[in-house]
Length: 469
Image (cartoon, rainbow, N blue to C red):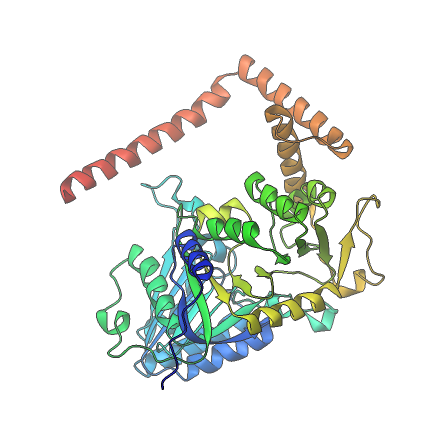
């Protein structure tokens, strides 16, 4: 007598429905996953997959740097294009600004490869540049896909000659039916910048066969869709035992911080791992301003001791895990194109928990009783970058804005450390007010130019819309 088919419990079905609706992504079964926890292993896997491609390569990344790493990837892509493989690459304009130009891609373009740039400044989109394509996505022949937080840059490998360790980051390799979701995610953004991918790439002749037993969701967020934000909120609400987060640019917004605090009050072991020294010092400074309410709620905060902790991961209850490109801040949740995989598999989640505990062995816990986080001896030798004058200036400006905003809106209690930023903010606002009263044209001219630019852009868009319809 054949075995009865497995039927999940009503509670399980309800949870799957809630997670799918929150993320805007279905649960896809039958996949296999490999985890990479540094760029060296990820790059090796990416290059091997690229060099094995026979039909198409779809590659999206926020940063392609014109260095040894970037040139190796560009050469491998060009070689496959010459062999007749369709190579489609998307890069982000802001991410690649100052990192690389078209010179990096001359060989690929000459070989017939295709390159598109996301949201470069345009006359008819005065504020379009605010949305970024922050994805890190690679798909080869519908056989394997890669998702994570790793960009194409030698910075991720560190500098052994100078004693600078490699960055800590995460990515996954995916085989199985979910690869089709990755293809569709790439195609959606590709079509925003020009002609769509042909059906030969978008629609396989036969469905992708199962490659394992892992269930996952591909959460491919577009600006203003907020699928991963809803999913993160829901996971914070249903976690029962533990919720361990790692994030490169944590800027906690009130609803999410409250969800974490509520989980901690219910006895959930909530932890947050962030960089001890960030490649964007201003963001690190803003992150620290949000530590106190987390610590007071019993949430444990750790700062990475290496050169940079760039991973964006989460694991909950030894059952659910997330790896991808989305940071825990509004720019990632709301403003950018992002891509993450949310995995529902006990074995993978336990692998993520083990890696998280290993990471904490290379981090310093932040505690309330200490005036500042204690550092392990030898941090300087590990090459932790120190922000230059521009970074310190940006950090100071953000600290001032954060303190002034909190005081004006009365959205949280101010700490003693915020007295100085509040004083500086008061003086700056006073100075700007005096200038506006005495010399109003200094403000009127820039605002007028911006208004005319926006009006022109809207008028042209209106004409284009009327012609199409």
